[in-house]
Amino acid sequence: MKDSKVLPKHQKRQAVVYIRQSSPQQLEENLESQRRQYQLVEKAQSLGWSETQCLVIDDDLGISGAKSANRPGYQRLISMMALREVGIVFGLEVSRLARNNLDWYQLLELAATFDVLIADEDGVYDPGEFNDRLLLGLKGTLSEVELYQIKARMVRGRMNKVKRGEYVFQLPIGLEWEPVTNKAQLSADQGIRHSLELVFHLFSQLHSIRGVLNYLQREGLQLPYQRVHRSLGTEIGWRRPSNDALHSILTNPAYAGVYCYGKKERYVDPLTQTVHVPKRERSEWDVFIPEHHPGYITLAEYEENQHIIANNRSGFPASQGAVRCGSALLQGLVFCKHCGHKMRMRYTKGHPYYTCDAAHRRYVIEPVPGE
Image (cartoon, rainbow, N blue to C red):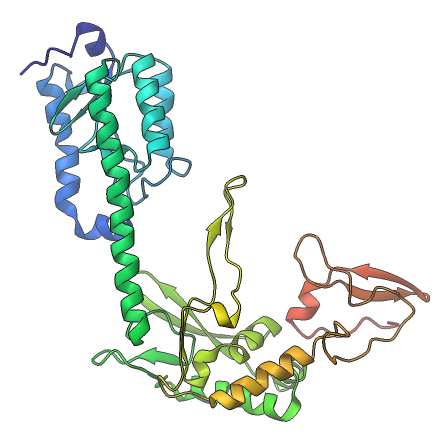
């Protein structure tokens, strides 16, 4: 089988078969798609390339095609095209190569510049020809639209279940989903339940996270934690208590029997490509359903705890936290540029200085003699 677009100059270079699947779940379940993509090697051979000239790039298995920066296999393909090592690129369909028009049109421009053909199950295309370029452009646009529609259907379906309080997500330690009815319930592990009940009881008595932390450290008690492993279930462990762990427990409304969703939002900085997950205000949460499941405390107790925690902050006059002593003028007002936490005051021979002491906030550490 020959194609009129395939010329000897193309056959002198390599035929690259680009293989990609969007998620690890597809790698496990959608095996037929993998087989079809690997079979493109046979199509390359039928068009005149020898077996030694066929290169399979499958470095991007399990990676979404929504962007190219995180796909090493795609970057490798682009580099080879720019070095004139590639005569034709095979993909099962356009969406395997790119799911957004920015990457797709850059690929077409590069292929046209370096005289590289693009092939899929339907045929062979020359990006340097207007009609083929137009057809490839339409396929790329449809691929991007398809990605939007897939995401939109998933998000709308998920939100529909969320509004009914039936969407199953990872619950905090001490709560679990009943496997038959998919209803949230208290953990069956009495040790976990007792430790969480102790935390809430101590806070109701001491009205201070640091006070609870001091007590647990002094008594040598540990707190439970969970680590979720894909396809392997949840691992439960115990470790020394920390300020972060206690704050997470005391501020999580799930422990008050509340089903809530949308407490955080996720966005990617377009300049640095870093992911940010800031917390949202209570009024901006997508769903807040009280009395959804059994809790360790009541909703009224939870609201009171939040008021106490907010009032304990030392950012006077916003709250009534403990007044700090010392000669420094900016104590409680200086934040670390690197970690974002408040800097701690220390004094050496009566002279104050500011230090980032995040470890001191996480765990109870014995003070340095002479402080």
